[in-house]
Length: 99
Image 1 (cartoon, rainbow, N blue to C red):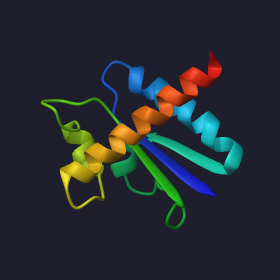
Image 2: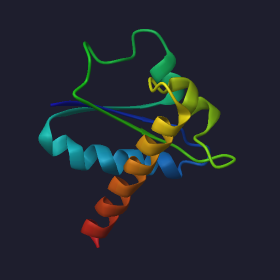
Image 3: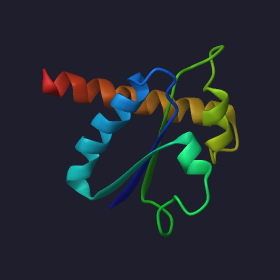
Image 4: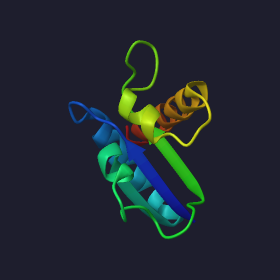
């Protein structure tokens, strides 16, 4: 399974969560972790379409950050927000499992 984790992080907290998610998902296959700037660059993405894409980042004004919204392939910000919430839930589960 090929997984891509895309994150937007202002202070490094979301980056650490993205790395933790990647470690957990990495047991199931290959994982590529990149920030939104890398994800929007040319030639940085995976070869082909990933099996799973996780988007995560801070919320700003009760919505995903502008960089995360710009990267989202979702047709609506609500879908991107749901993906962000799912990534946060995964990170929380990973942190709980480590405890």
